[in-house]
Amino acid sequence: MSGSLFIVAAPSGAGKSTLVNALLAEDRGLSVSVSHTTRAPRAGEQDGRHYHFVSRERFLEMQGDGAFLEFAEVHGNLYGTSKAAVAAPMAAGRDVIFEIDCQGAAQLRAVFAGAVSIFILPPSLAELERRLRARGTETDEVVRRRLAAARQEMRNAVQFDYVIINSDFSEALKRMQAVVIASRQRLAQVASTEGALFAELGIRLP
Ligand code: 5GP
Image (cartoon, rainbow, N blue to C red; front, side, top):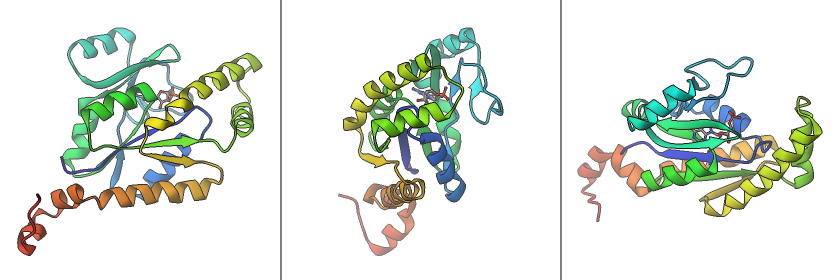
């Protein structure tokens, strides 16, 4: 394996997608893994770019064929990371970011021991609730359900390597970038991308 792998999870309302999109826009060496899902596309979402949108039958067929590295049921829909979604960017020498839920994060960690995991937290419960309500499209009941699910989800933060509190957006982005940059300097990463230099300098891995 040559590229770095980044697993990013967060409760809904923590600002995960906005942070990941900003990270991708500023870091050309990073690609996002495009997942498969059985949920319907939202306005503005494109098939093959945001997700590969498939029927439940097709998803289960792929699962039976062993096409997924991990999969999980989230809010009644199936989501999965296909082997192909990782293979293509990795073959191109790019680092890959996985924006997935905690069940998927645990499965991916088992597959890729060197993956770096990042959990994003809101600065407070009140702010999380405010952000969930600010979307404006959800009823009180839905907001309460999401909040309860978020509280449950946040307990998983203890299983992650890094935790970023998204209070100020640009500060949180800087911290995400710092994690990405530092992870690329791990010995195993540098050794795999700079094999020729290591040989020239006479450096051998233990
Ligand atoms: P949404 O439907 O809002 O795009 O995503 C719902 C949840 O599913 C989010 O927490 C998202 O990160 C997660 N998710 C998206 N893709 C995958 C995937 O491939 N595997 C898993 N396990 N979760 C995913």
